[in-house]
Image 1 (cartoon, helix red, strand yellow):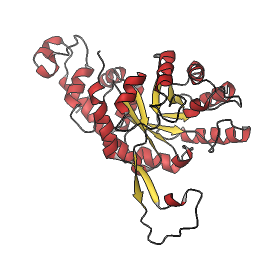
Image 2 (cartoon, rainbow, N blue to C red):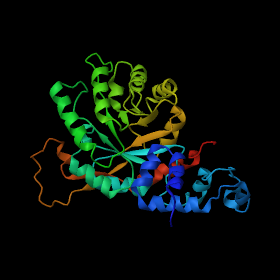
Image 3 (cartoon, helix red, strand yellow):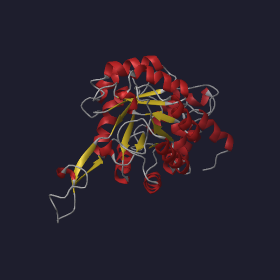
Image 4 (cartoon, rainbow, N blue to C red):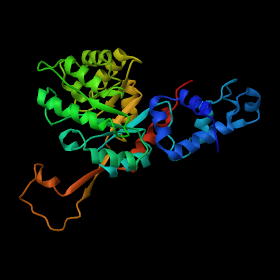
Length: 333
């Protein structure tokens, strides 16, 4: 199946950066999109001959997204270009595969989720990007704890950033605060410049800021493309009113993602209560360690009851949330 460079560019012009990233990263997606292009003619006359796209005809257009949606909506690997999207927070290759198989739209990759997420190793990043076709947003956080960084810590972070930019990633995730809880604009600007041209998400440091709404507005003004927040509360459900306020304040200048405690039971409700179009969840399940020899009184820094229990994202749980959001998957064109 052969297509001209112009045809490919026309496809790319119809879709946001994440979908172009998906197109370039996954051979299986490319074949599906190419097939759609082949089936879609540029005139409305041809559209009338095909009932599957006649109701979405767009005279003079080489590609109509609605036609593609109808053709691909029943394929298990299809991620719609519009509507409520799900990002899965992961810290392993197994979780990356589960998110991909479950139908997530992208992943946030960290190490040490038990510590709230730290910068992943190069090995983990390369393994994850090789194992799944989803856009991968990588955490930049040199240590656990608060988000006020020393110069030494910032140096480590910037060195990590420089190396991670060589990987097949979609963007970075970062946040920083002043001691008084306001946004550390100088550090943020330095990190944004280092991450360019990759988009950067301001993470849940916003939830421990002095004023989450003001912090979000300032972050967007600096150039952050996405805001990850639980609305200054322990869970997105509890902070839904603040998340909604952030969404109103930010408008369409950046993506607002509701995070923390998002699962099958509340995903739709959180989306409806906040007005956001993006949700963020880990959707993990516990798995017993394969170790038969166990030492009960020698912890490695985590609670004793978790030393021999591993947590990974569940493809079934991811699929359940995606399925729950399906009824609000499409917006009016």
